[in-house]
Amino acid sequence: MNKAFEISEYVKPTTVDEALAALDRYGAKGVILAGGTNLFLEGTGGASVAIDVKDIAIAKIASGDRLRIGALATVADIRQAPELKNAYYILKEAADLHGHNLIMRLATIGGNVANGHPVLDFPPCLLALDAVAVLKSSHGDRRVPLSEFFIGFKKTILRKDELITEFELGDFSQRSGGAFMKLAWSQVDMAVINLAAVVDLAVDGTCQKARIALGTAGPIPFRVEEAEELLVGKKIDDALIDRAVQICKATANPVDYFRGSIEYKKHIIGVYVQRGLSSALQRAVEEA
Image 1 (tube, helix red, strand yellow):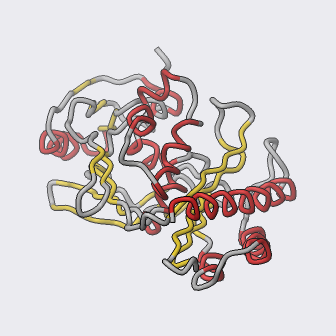
Image 2: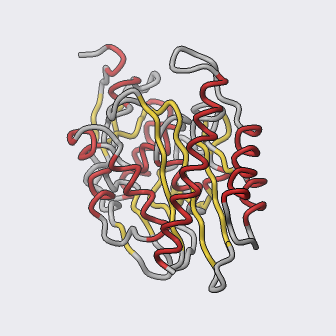
């Protein structure tokens, strides 16, 4: 066994309440095991008890007053979800680029977010969709906007006694479209650059809502609100997109390492913001 993943105890709760009781019982010794794709790679961080939550019924993707995605929904579930249309389609695009079939059937959206790494693919999409994370503990529930969830490199506001149970997505009209963009060395590799863009059009064709979320442009994934505000209330054209591109490049703060220099990454961010906004706009126009 990989020493980084050596455990002394394994528990398998079947309800959220049982999982929360296990988190309380084991404290820092316990670690949540969902799909395990990050955990087996990175290790338990010193925890010795695996709390396997895979059998808990929080994997549903459902529409109602708003679209909700259970934290245990796998990448494969998201790829196949008919509810993910218009702006929400960006989640399916991210899922399609999420590695090979084995990973897709194991990895969960909740684990992808809880990991906190800025190169992972679902956080930019969820940020662009105004997602709220529902966090449960034995002390009560919290609803945290994803824009407040990430607080540093691989650091989140998720407490050791909390479990992500679902994501509530924001409200986007039938005249919305989106695009997810990713540059990686291969389909199974982590992103060098990734981002999500959403455009929601009013009846007159002006932009009533815009979202641009960058995932690999700093220590945490984030929205470029200055560029979003530039687009709102206007009919988006190439010149306006170019101005948004410049804002995004100026805001981005990628790291300089062997996967790409800062200059290269900022260039790609500019290219992908342009492509992403253009594609999102075209899809919104087609839906209008």
